[in-house]
Image (cartoon, rainbow, N blue to C red; front, side, top):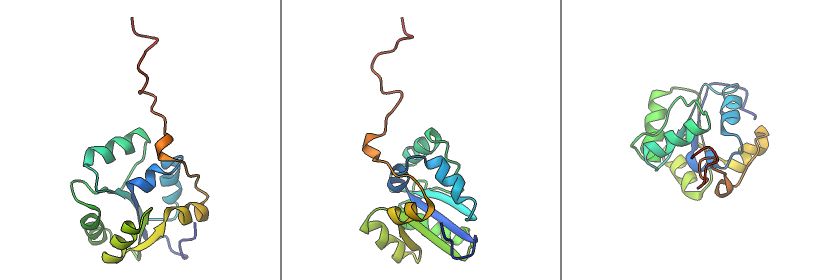
Length: 138
């Protein structure tokens, strides 16, 4: 992905954008090569973000915690002083929040094409623990 020639960037993914990536861990590892900080923000409760990032082995520099997206972006911008703050999202609401908090908005599809990330349908994600029957259980 073209970072405008500078790796002095903070990159935030909205959780739904992260869920739309085929390999969130690989995306974070790739982003670390051209950003200073990368993390996740969401309106969802903290445990939802934590469960998703643990399941996908995503190591984040920050997450929204009990705050909403707007407050989280404001706090991250204060705490992580970089030349650029870029918010990757999927909706018009994400764009509006980015503009309200003075973050650059980057639609997920555009980011994925630029960086070579593979997208997936989050609704079809398989859960290996969703099976109702177990072969190893008496």
